[in-house]
Amino acid sequence: MQIEYKGSSFIGEKVTLRPVDHGDIDAIMEWWNTYETRRFLLYYIPHSRSQEEEWIKNTIARANEKQEFTFAIINNADNEFLGTCDIRAIEWMYRSASIGIAIHNPANHGKGFGTDALVSLLKFAFRTLNLHRVQLGVFEFNDRAKHIYKKVGFTETGRRRKYAYFEGNYYDEIMMDILSDEFFERYS
Image 1 (cartoon, helix red, strand yellow):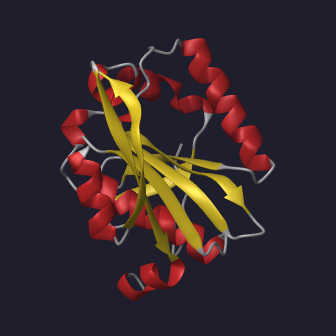
Image 2: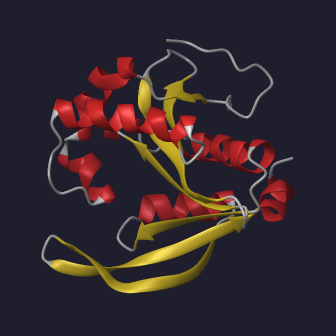
């Protein structure tokens, strides 16, 4: 499914963001349950196809209620499904929200897709939703993600010490955020 968003926040240099749809289930299931994908998101238990179909159904319902927006990340060069990203925990009164992003297939890591998707997601958050602040959490062992977030302009604001237990160790969750004016200084 291809949707055109010419001139919008949804098209980056490398990727296009479009709403997640029921037709994405095969692409999601191909990589979602791999250790490499789940490791950085701390989803320990693999999901069944039925669970993922229910997740898609719920993301569509939450988007219709303007509670959360989940997007498929599509490669502009070949229309390949790369992963997902979302804006959630939206606090309309405070103009604040949380985001998440995952490039599912490890072969697509390190190619700039995540950075481009993140910038497009933030353009949507700040330009379209009129949010003022966006935050995220990243686990201390996820160096690749920390590098991207800092590169885009996120600032570390705190830590949840020894928050996550993974592979026999406890890890901090690093909290980061970016304000709209900080983002627009980098991306007009």
